[in-house]
Amino acid sequence: MDTTTYNPATKTLENMPTTLDQAIEDDPYIPIKPARRKQDEPEPLRLIDFVPDVGYFIAGGISGITSRTATAPLDRLKVYLIAQTGQSKEAIEAAKHGAAVKAASSGVRSLWNAIRELWAAGGVRSLFAGNGLNIVKVMPESAVKFGSYEASKRFVAKFEGHNDPKSISAPSQFAAGGVAGMISQAVVYPLDTLKFRMQCETVPGGAHGNRLILQTAQRMWAKNGVFSFYRGLPMGLVGMFPYAAIDLFTFETLKKTIIRRNMKKYHYKNEEDALPGNFSLALMGGLSGAFGASMVYPLNLLRTRLQSQGTASHPRTYSGVFDVTRQTIKYEGVRGLFKGLTPNLLKVVPAVSITYVVYENTKKALHLH
Image (tube, rainbow, N blue to C red; front, side):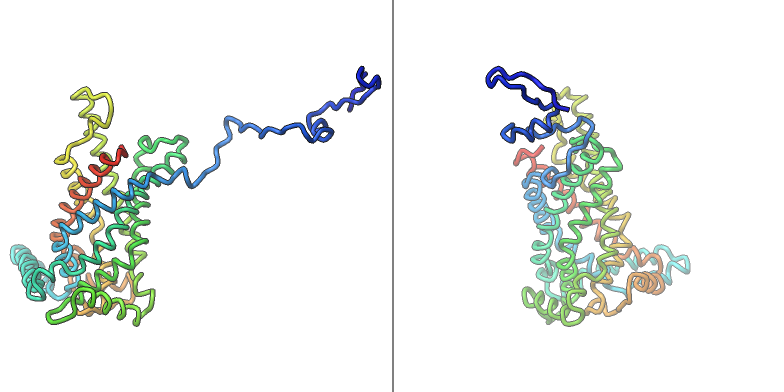
């Protein structure tokens, strides 16, 4: 209802509005302020809240290029051993008859034979086959991995009700690492497949360099089009989640432990002064990488065989995930699922060590701590 009051200026009785809405209707020139958000009402999610500093992507890219170039020959050897399917029969028969020493020596001979065959195929160039493509692949992969990891931690922190990525729970940190790994894997998977197939097509007297890259890509496209570049992707994502989760979670946990120890032991007042040194970073990186790689190696092997099937080094073909698993166990035993693990660890440990040392130092140089 309106109330009637006397206006001395006009000497008349006027109706006064009793509500704010009515007052606004009567006078459209009254400024309207936005309603205040209730204290218990959550803020809307914005993409900008999760985008980390571009420096994390830069640091990740630099660390990836450095580590992969340094370990390229070991990566080449690992792929070559994985693609070979006929050299495990002797070891399987020896193991069946209880000749453990003979079985082990067979594996050593396979490693040495692989080195000799690669050298005969093209010398030093053969050991670095695919490294140019590897650099093109690893730069965005490593950049996206570390950048996505920071973004995932920010998202989880928001989900947990706070905005501090350093304070997220252990399960959330584990999941953030896995998601970051899957995102990076999906981004560079076509290049990954091309690299594997190109390495398996390197034979004595065959094409090399850019000619081999173009030739391999043309064959893949002619066979199944774009699907050839994504063969084995589901298994790759399944294998990448636990690997990246274990790797990043283990490293972060060790890093926090050392920081707490240094602050307590040396009475540092802030975390930046208590950061681990390069030697500790290398040890932590090697341990986390070896642990993660060993846990998911069978999935990595099966994915690689799906990617390289039908090549000169791996002529065997498969109808899918279950078929490659069945054939591997049938012809090579369970031991075949871990073929190439030794050179893989010899590559992973120094590669991940170098990655984390370069990444942490680049972050420090960019003031990202």
